[in-house]
Image 1 (cartoon, rainbow, N blue to C red):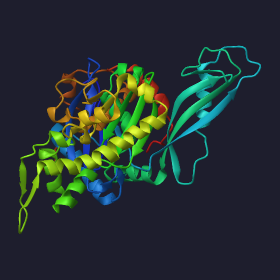
Image 2 (image 1 turned 90 degrees about the vertical axis):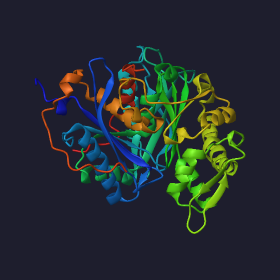
Image 3 (image 1 turned 60 degrees about the vertical axis):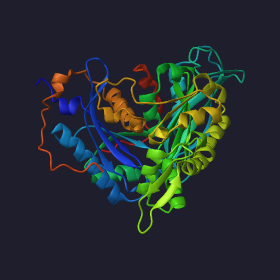
Image 4 (image 1 turned 180 degrees about the horizontal axis):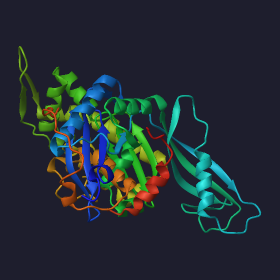
Length: 438
């Protein structure tokens, strides 16, 4: 082979979620699409509400996920570039205004000046223990008169930039790095999870015209709004699908794993869509538990309608971008998006057109069918992001078949738009926010 494909062309994404940990290995093929050559899933028992609580358990889940991927592809991946995501209720957003004074300058505003303005914002003083994850430009006002999203080429003496600052606890970011290091992984970059999900699930047209992506995970619900092709607002809501499972478990006095199966197999978030006459018998010692499908729907609806949809609607209304979201509506993704009739309920309660986001834009059609689900949007988005960051030549599938570095796998571990120009914008937003792990 002319080159070491395993080092120069393959990328690995790692999604450390509340309900699962996923490792995906892939590359950008000769058609410019992302192809997957192997993946693995591990148990996530050390993460709560999107944050790592137990290092040992999380590392064990990462190793399980990684080993399952290695078992598929038959070679080691430790030396490949890994891309991971960050979420959790420790993520905070705030608005920040910063000025550029150009008195005496009669030339149009240049891109270098806007870059300088953003770089100065990155030096903003934060509270002790916080770290800056991202700086998202929202708008610019020229000479206190004209508001616009792109001031380059405009004449003016003052530029006021409004930015969204995304911050997180430095300790939480360090936990991700620590878990990676203990699992023999070197992260090339850690990015905000809703941005990763949007890369996999949103079309370029949606990003341009205005859309809200809602990623409902096990521990958190992540909201990100796009306008003019770029993210303009994000919010992490500290509630996800696990709380619905906990409600069912508590009300029915059953284990959480049983409640999760009950939610998936018989649950709906619209009460009128349930089978009024269906009585579900849940095996339990010493006496089985019986619950009507209608009552189950009421338990689910109470939490979804008020705490999840209600919170999302409030955040959109308070973001200042409700009129933008009205253009293309809402895209639901994440494991929670698989709840029956959720799309209909979100559309009814918010008034926005709603669709389910499947990770499909920019990916080969032959990727594993198990991955073509909303619950893998973040992992596939991280892979797609990493493929563009790494760059390099596009390669054919025949070149991937025999990587130079091989390693015999261990015994199997139990499973516990495409529009590449968009990435230039994302890279600009995300650069320098988290130090790379050497």
